[in-house]
Image (tube, rainbow, N blue to C red; front, side):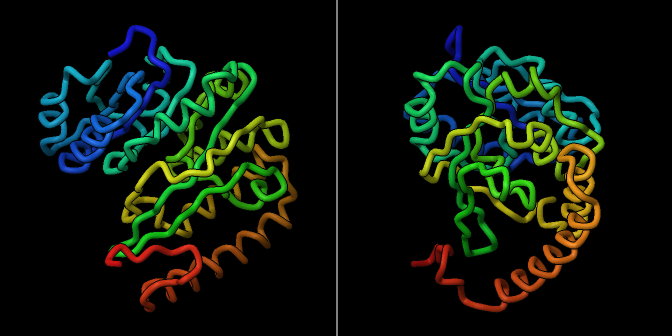
Length: 262
């Protein structure tokens, strides 16, 4: 590992013995390797710890202990970072080979004090299909819903200096809540490239819980109107249910979808 890494990559794990190997292997394939790897495990009961230990030479910091969820784990990881630019991954996420190179080209001439956040496009994998998601940060849109892909994003240390760490009372929408604190003052860049493959069979599919937490975050951290936010909560819940129904009952949506078998 480099003594002064350009990126700190933080991965939270819990009972992810197969998934964590996939993610670590994707880091091995990077064309840009100035990064440190930090893994925070929530006291797994499977073979996650032994799998991580097999890759110990690649890891700057590793701990396995009980935590309050992914955002608590990420907060622990933040305390160990040395780089100015921070990436959060989930076990099972696959960072594409030129991902770090792309981020580096965009950020290398920008002092981390001049930008809070950089997002990209990602491929979210649903069973045998894939959906391309991720847009440029825009407060008018972001205040309604999270339109950036957190797993395909790079955070400046500055955002944590200004906003504090993740609120670990959130279990699914803590990443959204963190960015809402900046409101229209967030300074962001967009890398219009696909950088990550992300499996979507985990917690993020818990539609009702995600929307409920997002509603709460909009009120408490985004300073938004309760009534309007609640109406958008109802609208979003309906739209997501309809989309999921048609998504899983059709071959693929030709707009923005990728058929992995073609």
